[in-house]
Each structure stands twice: as structure tokens, then as C-alpha cells.
Image 1 (cartoon, rainbow, N blue to C red):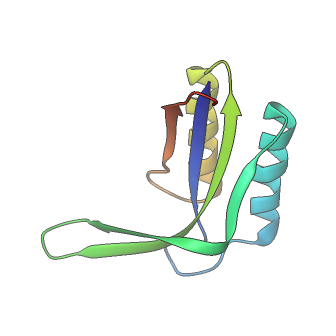
Image 2 (spheres, rainbow, N blue to C red):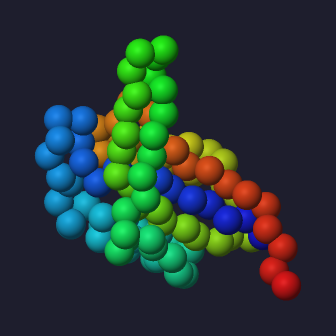
Length: 102
């Protein structure tokens, strides 16, 4: 079993907030394809990273999770690229972990 997490920014690089409809669209797409989804949207997570030795960048994000038996890497690569375009990101994080259900 695989747990796939998508980290989506709440704001574009110019500071404007993405419309709620964009997040609902992602939720609906994933729920339709995988039969369920978990979203962490009530209290945005904070991302922080060093872009250079003198520049620190932060982001408010929401996290979407789905579980899947089969990991279709080609589909996920294409979907990540599509989300990066829709959310105007140079890099958009989609990560996967192998999990065991207890």
C-alpha cells in the first residue's frame, strides 16, 4: 500500500490567495480516481526552506493524501506537472511512502 501526499500552496508567489475552487477541484479529482481522500486544510502547515545562504522562503500549505495499492508513477508525474502549472509553482512536492495497514 502506498500513501501519496500532495503539498499545495495557499498563495501564489505574488501573495495572492488561490481560489477555494482550485482546492475543491483537486479534492474531487483525487476522490474520484482513488475512491477517497484526506485533506489537512483547517490549519495550514508552514513550510520554510533556504533558497540561498541569505534568503529564507516560507509558504503556507495544505496537504492532500490518498492511499493506493498500485503506484502509477507516470500518472503521478503528469498530475504533479499539471498541478505545478495550475498553482504556478516551479516545484510542487508530491511524495510517496510505502505503508502497512495494521
